Image 1 (cartoon, helix red, strand yellow):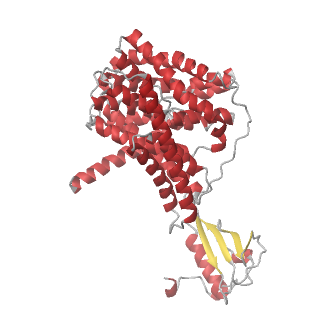
Image 2 (cartoon, helix red, strand yellow):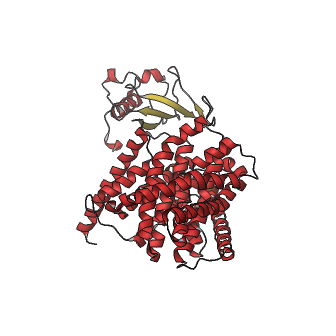
Image 3 (spheres, one colour):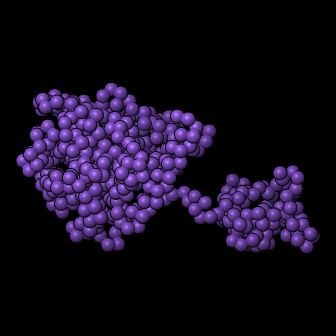
Amino acid sequence: MTLPELYVSLLIGGAVLLASIAAARTAHRVGLPSLLLFLAVGVVAGEDGLGLEFDDAQLAQALGTAALGLILIEGGLSTRWDDVRRQLAPASVLATVGVALSVVVTATGAHFLLGMDWQLALLLAAIVSSTDAAAVFAVLRALPMPQKLRGLVEAESGFNDAPTIILVMVFSTAAGDLPGPGPLVLNLLYQLAVGGTLGVLVGFLGVAALRHIALPATGLYPLATVGFGVIAFAAAGAVNASGIIAAYLSGMVLGNAQLPHRAATRSFAEGVGWLAQIGLFVMLGLLVDPSELPAAIIPALVIGSVLLLVARPISVALCLLPFPVPWREQTFISWAGLRGAVPIVLTTFPIVAGVAGAGEVLNIVFVLVIMFTLIQGPTLPAVARRLGLVRTGALREIQVETAPLDVLDADLLTVGIPEGSRLHGVAVFELRLPPPTVVTLIVRGGVTLVPDRETVLRSGDELLLITTPLTREAAERRLRAVGRSGKLARWHGEHGSPSVSDG
């Protein structure tokens, strides 16, 4: 790639990124899932729109799998262990037995209602059987609902990607000779056990390292945390285990540990997750041919209806029989099976494997995700309220976060009062700082105190001031003036101009 080509690529990439961010803001304001507009950006930018050509399914598979790993790392970092630990058993059953039941029922519908052969029907059913972790996290965490219910749905969405990917890979390489249940179960157990073990081990290794190694810059802690998640993801994949479950569990271990700069780490991981989602959905939007989508509408409606109204409720009801989950919560769990990035990414596996009819499956899944996201996503809060699972006035846990000063349009200044400074003995009100500049904190002898207007400054004090970009220079000049000539500095002709030594 030449430099001119690089600049053009970066220009296009930056424009698509900003368009996607604007789409996310629009989607939030009108109550639509962001993934729909991200997909739309990709379709508009594609060869039937602005003319960008992208039909490399193998590259889409590789990039999409990497993006899923980053999304699951962010999901694990933001998942509270207390919310999911008591729901591990039912969530694990839903993510394994529930997926299998859903695949069988949906494949039966695809075979008899659409006339698909069994391999293609099973492949399509496996692709759409996984719920989308990013969509579930985004919707549920905005609702004041029981923690155990939210934890169950979140844990299922984090765990069921791995079994789904395994089934899709098996059905994509079977070449018409489907494996027996024994080898399939052994493969599933190996991938989940080894992937889960690696994820937990790498997570604890990351916790030990980040607690005992002092990094030279604050910004390195978020990078290191996400880096450990990437290592877990890649290590599991390298030994043919589930990198998805490893990424999620390593993120969960790291996110629930008392590590330095946790808030900054979660903010960084959230940004990485958003970037991965934007890139993933735009790429998938580029991959489809819009002219072929209308023919997939009827099959997508049929498969989606079987999945949403038959397969999902049956799998939820049977899997939760051993657990004390009320029928209202089971109904909500059935409706909360949101689909998103994972099914569309999984359609690239049979395309790369050369399975006959794989292009048709891509179009069906693409249309299904769009239609049923429009149906389920906006209605999920209403369903929760109708079932009595959202209580008006319910308490929500407060979110404590570091406020970025640029968002507040403010600057933070620190001022030390050295020996001999005329600031010694001056009361706060006598500083006459330009509004809205305020002295917010004084550190004196290792003790912090919140000053009032009568508080007298002393040598050795460290002052913390909040000001604005417009008044910062005036505030600095006033502080220098008082430091040189005392509270009557202006009467003495001192206006605090920077000296040569001030730089």
